[in-house]
Amino acid sequence: MTTSPERPSRRTAISDAALELAARGGNHAVTHTGVDVHLGLPKGSTSYYFRTRHALVSAAITRLAERSRADFAALFDDTTGDPSPPADLIARYLERLLTVRRTDVLARYALAPDARLEPEAAEALAACMFSISAATALVRELGAPDPETAGRDLVTVLEGVLFDRTRGARAHTSSDSATACVDEIRSAVALWLDALCAQQ
Image (cartoon, rainbow, N blue to C red; front, side, top):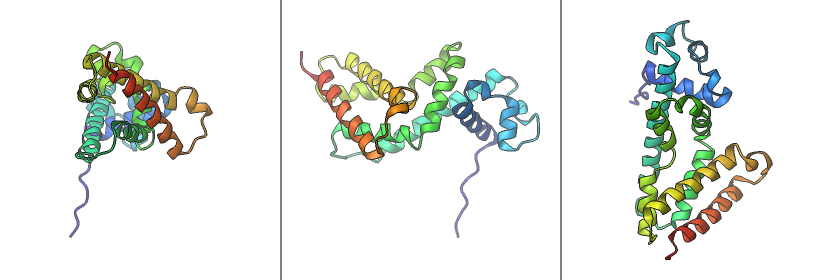
C-alpha cells in the first residue's frame, strides 16, 4: 500500500505561491489577491493567514530560506565522500540553482527591494543561496592563507556567476547547452579557487 505525500500546510502553500508570483512578475505581483487567484482560494483567504503584505512577504522570504537550507543539505549530503574536485561540486550546485531552483533564484532577486527595509529579512535573503561558513571551511581546507576573507570572496564570485546567468549579460546572449554552461562555470570556479587559495 502506497501512501500519498503529505500536503503542505495552507501557510506553506501560500508562501510557496508568493515565491512563484515574485519569480514571474516581480515583487509587485505578490499581493493577497494574487495569491488567492493563483491558488484558487476564496477571496480573503490569504489575508486570513497573513494580515498585511509585509507579513506575506516576510513569510515568503522565510519559506525561501527553508527551501534553500533543505536543498543545500540534501545535495551536499549526497556528495559525502565524493572524490570530485570542489569546483565540480560547486558547478553542480550552480547548475541546480540555474535549472530546478530557478524560480527560487528569481524570487530572491524580486523580493530584495522589500527585504532591504527589514534587517532580519535582508540577512535571510542574502544568505539563503550561499553559505559563507561553508565557503570559509572549504577554502581553509584548500589552504587559503586568509580563509575568512577568501570564503567571503568566493561567495561574491558565485553570486556574480548566478546573477550573470539569470539577469546579467549571459542570460540574454549565451546559447550554450547545459553541459557547456556547467563546463564554463567549473573552469571559472576552479580558477578562482586557485587564486583565492594561493599562498601569499
